[in-house]
Length: 105
Image (cartoon, rainbow, N blue to C red; front, top):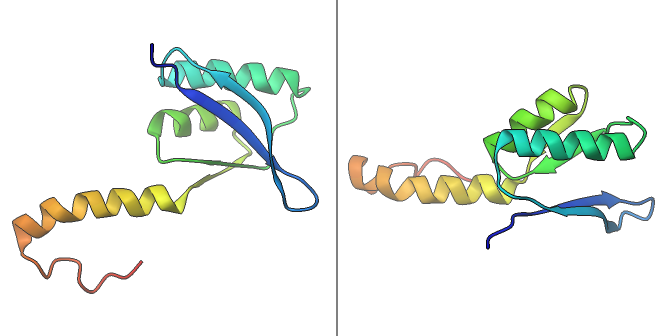
């Protein structure tokens, strides 16, 4: 059985990351993330976080927009870079080896 793990990590006043909450989910669908976010928000007395950092998953992004409309949503750069690297190989095959040579991350 594959249960996605959803960690909630906070940064304390010493700039240390601390596992605050976590959940095992049945799937990674938008409605599941909306449900989880609403439950988390209820437990936190309806106080939304100022910033949420996630991977590039569109389902999570949609849920954050719905449940936390005033929260700033950021993407982990490592995931963006990995996605670019994965897409670069097919583009280089299609457009030649110099494709993207002027782009530096």
